[in-house]
Amino acid sequence: MEQLTLTVLVATMNEEASIEECVRRIFGVYPDLCEVLVIDGGSDRTREIVLRLCEEFSRLRYLRNDNDRGKGHATKTGIATAEADVMVEIDADLQFLPEEIPKLIAPILEGRADVCLGSRFARQSTHHDHSLLRSCGNMVTSLYASVLYCHRMTDVLAGMSAWTRHTIESINLVSDNYSYEVEIPVKALRAGLRVADVPVTTEPRKGGRSNVRVVRSGLAILRDITLFRLGLR
Image 1: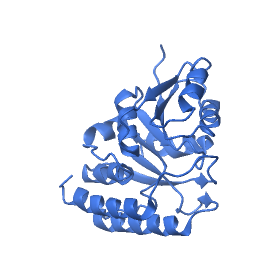
Image 2: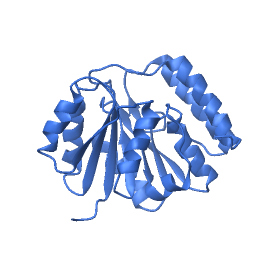
Image 3: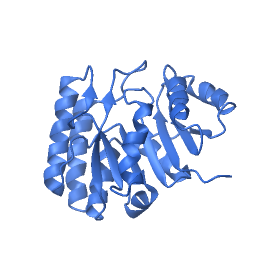
Image 4: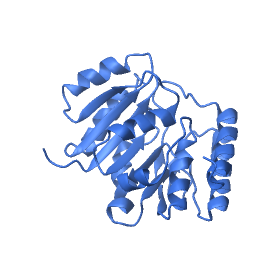
């Protein structure tokens, strides 16, 4: 079997409305040498849809995450199973575009970065219909992390990001909640690795609903950023 070049992690929580299109668009970009892992903690028809697609796409795998403790937990489940040396996570709701994965991972493949964050707020990014509260919260969180780690990051809560196997093995990823999104880049910086922002396009989600409790999650993430900086997590 040929060596895989990329693993795409898709964590889902009741995303039956968009998961088929998401999978098809990923394989449309990478028909060969890419595996897609759908990590499912929901209760809708996602499992049925993905298992049917597995008959069409030999590189697609369905991972049932029965004890789902949050998106970070689902991502760790996927990482433990991933086979490629470069990993990408992308949301199943198609707010981020699978067609931009090549742009996202280019700095890694060119040897310029170890972690790439798909930024909604960098120059040249394009976004539509963002919640003002969530956008302001993301920017405040990114500014706080940038100051603490002396490295400018415009979107540490990116729903589309990439990293190398070496990176993920160099850090102790512990978060089960949304804090994992910032934990990966900040712990990479602590380990002396390189983190880059990549401007991306975002669109309104296709079906489903967000599971993020903005204020509660935001406060937990700010707490955890501080704990990561102090080496307490």
